[in-house]
Image (cartoon, rainbow, N blue to C red):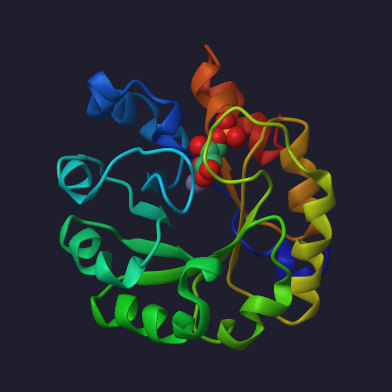
Length: 218
Ligand code: DX5
Ligand code: ZN
């Protein structure tokens, strides 16, 4: 870990995919004091084979923490405005869903007043996002195949984190999928600073303890 990486704030983002959607705002409120950001997974049944929620639901999420919206959808450019208006602080799109338009989509997100990020699926290399590193607040390295919570961490994704830092990228590097007390330290050590955790965090009876374990301070 380099000195600049040591200075990066380690942030924890619970993925509400593993929360009880019937009482989402209460669930969020009960974890707010232990985490930094709320991670919202949006799936359309096309880009991934699962459907979750859309902008009308995001609009009703109440939190004092910023909402990071992870769009696992096709044609994200059609919907970014809706999510910006629904209250997203940061919108993360998949490079695979944007193709040639990636830079333009990210600029649109910026113009809507949100932070922007780009995510890569396990089969996508860092090369795919090299040209937009100057523009993004976050690169999200998927550590499972996107679509579902509760899957096993793919350790072979870890070199992508180091590769991004070696390219001089100083923004947030997020990891998403199978993040727990064992896998988070591996990612932090490689240079990740934004840990997204769904099932491990929400299943824990002691959220404070789970948060500290993920951050590596317990
Ligand atoms: C998967 C989602 C993740 C998921 C993580 O496609 O992007 O955010 O909720 O869940 P766990 O931590 O259970 O792997
Ligand atoms: Zn996610």
